[in-house]
Length: 127
Image (cartoon, rainbow, N blue to C red; front, side):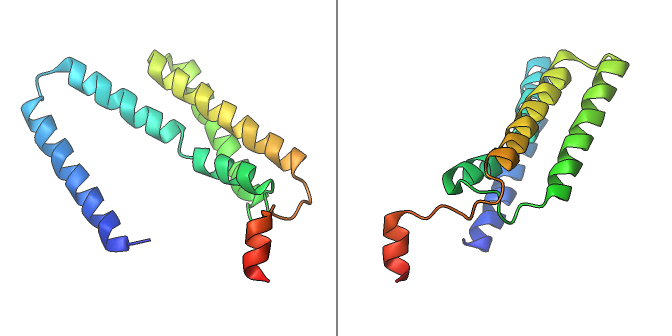
């Protein structure tokens, strides 16, 4: 909600990572962990959308073209990782992304044509 707080958090996180990287530049384990963390974050970027769809029991407002782009992009990445013999963490990232893509596709099938769910409290507050 507060954009300035967001920017400050990004700046602080960037500074902390920069300082940590400077002091840990000779640590292979640090860079391995940093790589796993970044791949994990990238692989799960869509989870908030999955959760929102589940809470609302609807995919209203979510573009099918956007989801198709995610799916085809993740499939291409996974294929590239397999064909180039990428390290295991990249293959794991691709598998997680494709699993989440499958969840979103399932939500499109399950929630097709449904308006967003509103709790009795939300309906009461708006009337």
